[in-house]
Length: 426
Image (tube, rainbow, N blue to C red; front, side):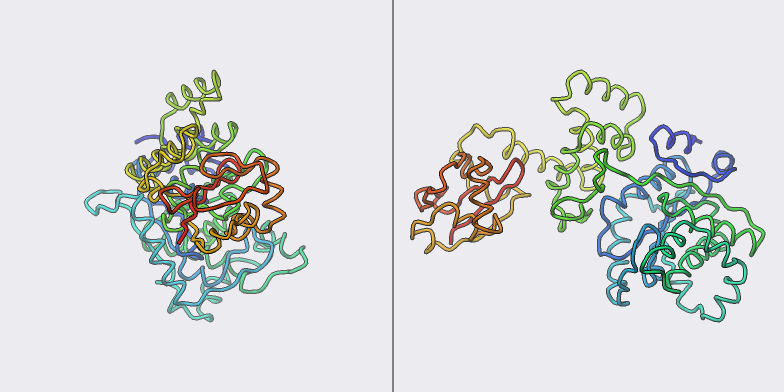
């Protein structure tokens, strides 16, 4: 059986680990779980680390359980949060749980003939009939308030201005009971998660020990940060989602491709399944000529195929080539089909009557909402940050008229280096 902890250590994926965890994993097939938060109807790339942990676990011969928090989603986890979040209605939560389950099923092997087949679980199943009185009697009495108050996630909130509701304070008991229930009914001996979950996870191991005299284990993965201090997974447009309808495969590919060198070097270990010799060789080759962006291209390829499949990766490459690699080619050489099927381009409809009144470029850019105001548009044109049909625009007096249309219908507008807009004139 491969040594899971050894594999995760060289990848930089272990932060805290409970004594005895590695020995337990080396001793026998171990059932382990990670919880997923159904606060949206899609997971985003912040969820990729726990997904990848479960995949590594299964590859090493152990049994993964993906727990969707249908019950805990109703409460809200205070870990890493500065204020209480809005509670979702049951209908929205049920919809989100179904969507998240469907996504998780594409990454793990659920074939029941396997000794380590993956399973899904939803904590609403065991909490829905659990009365408040039963909970405080059967769970609450085993964990002291002193123990709960000592947790960092609780301390930070209690010391802050907003304080903490009783609902949130009980979250670690609710999550702890998940671990206890899975330990009793599914023989789960290990919980994994992000480092912000350490307090909640340890409460689970403590509840198992105090309530049933059982033994349980835990480890966490560091929270992913960007080398420049920015928040991982956030862009100007918001989260990078795993759902292709929310973040297109092209946009997804571009996110990884645009990683800086330091991030690409650490992310390729965490977000791909390439082995150590391969990654060491890639890093070495990349350092010889960083301009070739070998690390970024490999990272973007591996993660895009993992999440969206080979076909969508191929399409993302095709779009990237057309948009970025061949910018010397005239826009007129792009077929109507090329323009229409390039994903990742923002599509805008524009009124032909306005175009025929000889609209100046600044007004055109503001009216199409490519820029929020004429002032912003003017400043960017003067700074050389705008191209139309692959020609840089520097004259703010330039008139946009129908003679400029590609195939009599389109204008291809580029803002900055990476933002493209296809304006259809109707």
